[in-house]
Each structure stands twice: as C-alpha cells, then as structure tokens.
Amino acid sequence: MLQRLKNDFHLSMITLVGVIASGTLLPYALFRIATGNYLVGLVDLLMIAVSAFSVLMAWHTGDTERPGFLMAAVFCFGAVLVCMKLGQDVLFWIYPLMVFIFFLVAPIKALLLLLLMVCAIVSLNFSDHTVIFANNFQLMAFITTTLITSIFAYIFAYRTHLQRQELRRLATTDPLTGAATRHSLTDELNYAIQHYQQKAVVSGLMLLDLDHFKRINDNFGHQTGDQILSQLVPLLKQMIRQQDSVFRYGGEEFVLLIREIQLADLHRLAEKIRHAVWHQLALPDGSALTTSIGIATVQHAKDWESWMQSADVALYQAKHNGRNQVVIAQAEHHS
Image 1 (cartoon, rainbow, N blue to C red):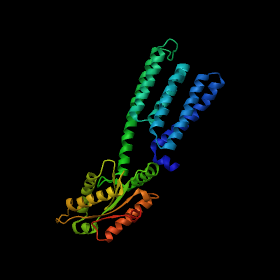
Image 2: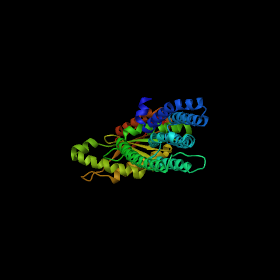
Image 3: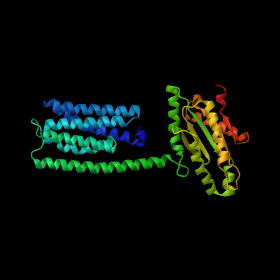
Image 4: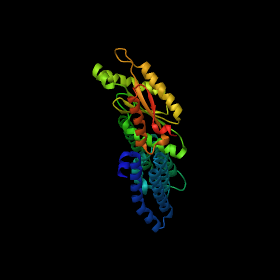
C-alpha cells in the first residue's frame, strides 16, 4: 500500500486530499445539521461522500483522472452553494480549496474550474436574494486575490507537471538508445497477460541479442559498440507498429513486445527483423552484424517471469544452434 502511494503521485494526492477534506468537513457538517443549517450540512456530507468514493475508485481501478476531476468539480460546486447560503463567512475556505484543486486535476482543468467557481460566486453577489460581499472593495479584493492565487498556483502546478514528466521519461527511457528501460518492462508484460486473460488478446515477445557483441567492443572499442546500439533501436522501431514497444533489457539484449499478434505472424516479423539487422547494419570493417532472436507468445505464460524465461530459453537455443536465427519457444510447439 505504501509502495503504491510512493510510486503513484496522483493516487497519493487524491488520497491525501480526500482524507484532509473528510477530516476537516465532518465536524462542520455535524455542527451545521445539529444547529438546523441542513443545506450546508448536507453539502458538506456530499463532499465527504464524493471524496471517499473518489479515493476508493482510484485505488480500485488505478484510474486517477476521472476520480480527481469528480472530486474537484463537486468541491467547486459545493463551495458555490455554501457561499450562497453563508456568505462571506466561508470565503477564507476558498483559498485552500484552490490549492487542493491543482493537486486533483491537470493544471489547465484546475484553472478553468476555479475561474468558473469564482465567476459563479461573484455572480451570486449581484442576485436579488444573495449578498456575499459587504461592499465593492471587498468584492474587488476577492476577485484580485483569487485570480493571483489561481495564476501562481497554475504556474507552479504546470512546472511541477513538466518536471514529473521529465523524471518519468528519464526513469523509463534508456539515454543511449531511446528504448524503454527494463524498469517499465514488467508493467507492460503484466498488462499484456491481463489483457489476454480477460479478452483473449494474444501478444508476442521477442528477446533479441546481437551476436558476438563483446568481440565488437574488444576489436573496435566501446564507442563503436554504443553507435551500433543507437542505430539498432531506430531500425527496430521502423519494423514494428506504433502500439508495439522496444525495451533495452541489458547490454546488447533487447525485448520487443508485439501486441495483438499470432505466433506465425510473430515468427515472420522476427525473421524480417533478423534479416534487416543482417543487411542494414555493419561493422566499421564492412562485415555484417547479426542477431539471434527467441520468441514466445503470452498464451503459455503464467506470469511475466515465465514468459521471459520461455523467450530466453529460445534465445539460448538460437545461440547454441549457430546464431543469426530465430527460435520459437518450446511450449509453442505443443499448442
């Protein structure tokens, strides 16, 4: 549980905001109802209920976007209703609410929600039945301070969003080749297994290893080896679809996850890739570069480790048989 909160920023923020909102609003809701202010008390209880539902939904589904937006929208709507009933007594609560909203949804959505909320509160002040601000000076002060708070909160949230994206990219992208890293491979394999179990969608796995790569580094230097690896990944990406993925598994080993493909097509694609590496990549002395590939489909995978193991055994067999070839995992032959 703690590890999941640590790894998922949005889930941790939704959980934190939900806990704080519920803990803060519950005493007020009970007090309002006890003193006969039923509308405000019910609005507070509604926000508590939506907070709890959104947190549970985010934990259960893994989707944080929709629960976060639901919570943010209800909070803004509730703030308008409470302002309409209690007037300027609750205006101070608008400012922490504005900060909360930026933790729940994307910065631009948060800014739009808050602008709509402020416009609604200001509009209520000019209605015949509601007076929120004591005078025009207080009205202008509210508009000015909420706009300044929204703008600066937006800038901070947007910069933080960009930094999180960059950190995620650095954590999941190999800086030399541009392939995805081994760190992100496990999640993708688990998703493919789950997709097969739920919808019978078959995905294929290729474990690709450049032949005699140590000899290349020894004869031509590590810089040449790095150049070959950086040329290999763009070639692989040209051979697969946008929905497929390339991962650097370690050293000169790469994993290709090919989604929605049967074994025969996976084998043909692997042969095309082997042929492309053989004829399109070359060493500084003009000699050909070759690769060995082991392939396996998700159909025989109990988990991601067994799936990788099947492809790894097939790759070992390709090496043992003389390299520069594709070998299908043994389990596939008994299907």
